[in-house]
Length: 117
Image (cartoon, rainbow, N blue to C red; front, side, top):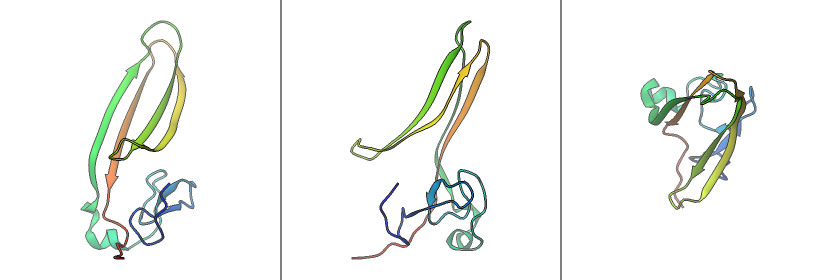
């Protein structure tokens, strides 16, 4: 979670629907897809304002006849390689012949007011 103040780029709040930490500027919660507000900066810029600079899709299958467990972990690092956030996204088990698919997407939007000091 960032320490940016209210109204600045990177400021966060809690989604009233799912309680995930989201960007203060979000009009739709990226975790639960509930609409949070109508109008605002994103509406002024149009629906095409969001960019998806990274999208990864993949799948994996149980490699043999026994049960296998898995853990999906997401780590975010800054430009110096320092870990900013690490989250356990999901865990589970796969029986023989089962497969799991995943999609990772990073969405970027212009947001927050930038102030000069």
